Amino acid sequence: MQRVRCIAVIGGSAATLPQDFVASDACMHATAWGEPSAPVHIGRLHGVPALYLARHGEPHAIAPHRINYRANLRALADLGASDVVALNTVGGIAGAAAPGTLWLPDQLIDYTWGREGSYHDGALLPLDHIEFTEPFDGGMRESLRVAADGAGVVAHARGVYGCTQGPRLETAAEIERLRRDGCDLVGMTAMPEAALARELGLRYAMLAMVVNRAAGCSAEPITMAGIRAQSARCLAQAFAVLERLAALAAAG
Ligand code: HPA
Figure 1 (tube, rainbow, N blue to C red):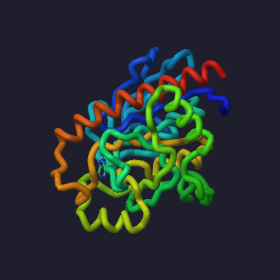
Figure 2 (cartoon, rainbow, N blue to C red):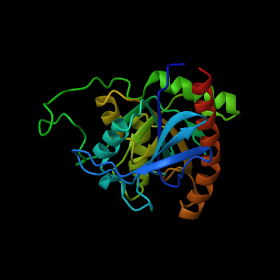
Figure 3 (tube, protein in one colour):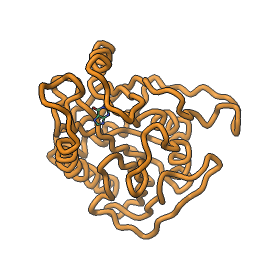
Figure 4 (cartoon, rainbow, N blue to C red):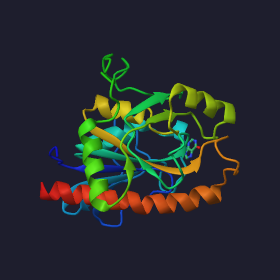
């Protein structure tokens, strides 16, 4: 396992602070790119320095396309993050992506538009082009896989995440297109988050939680009640993985 100095958790829809997170402070850390979605909670997870940030704000109110991803990632880096675990609720496209399952995607396709997606856009920092062949950190994905195994949680070891603009859910035809493109999962928030983490040199991986079958993939309608029920179930498993990840980091 790579040496973890500080684990930052970015919580998505339905996420809350991990149960074992021992908070010592919360800080609204302003950056040159503005303020993050919410105060960053500073503390420890199994003795390991840890940060927690609610991606959609506290309370949950910021739509995916309005999140200040640059401020969020910059704030976490400024406060010492070395490793970032992104918790993302997603719709399942692949047959195996049933509601209640957890995934560690290894690839993504970006369908979003109009989001501020780089620090190096020539405004505050000079233009640069990051290497992004593998959008998620391989070492972090492996650490999460080992942690999931240790926690007795099944997490699919790879998959392709399609990032849509939201905040509405997709049409059946849009999901059919994503399926043809090779997407297994669909969500709204991995981009530009993953690319910004790479620009900052953070080890970033996603623990995706399938909370519904994507549009047109099931005869059942997608309801917020169904999504909420699956989110609670997935989150309990995701927290078990996070706690194991921190325990392994503390032991290593
Ligand atoms: N589509 C996009 N984002 C999502 C979905 C979905 O079906 N479910 C949870 N996040």
